[in-house]
Length: 115
Image (cartoon, rainbow, N blue to C red; front, side, top):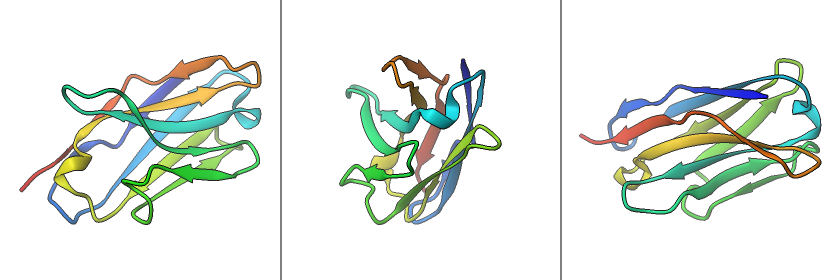
């Protein structure tokens, strides 16, 4: 399994970004998929997760501003982020956790929120 993240960039405070992650290989539809982020000097943290049954959870820091979605037909997942804040600046990683609890990670995409 390989995950390819895209969509990061520089955005002004209050702006929006949509991150995408494409998975190759098998098992996507039965796996939970998620976005994590890691800011400089901080630990990697969960941003949002969507299960195979499309149940979602969000970190408090992004709740109400972000939406995670998946398309099992295309093996893709997205994270729509709105009302971005400087504290959202981080490298964002997509993650896929299989039924056997094996984790796969994308390469990370930089999101910078700055004026």
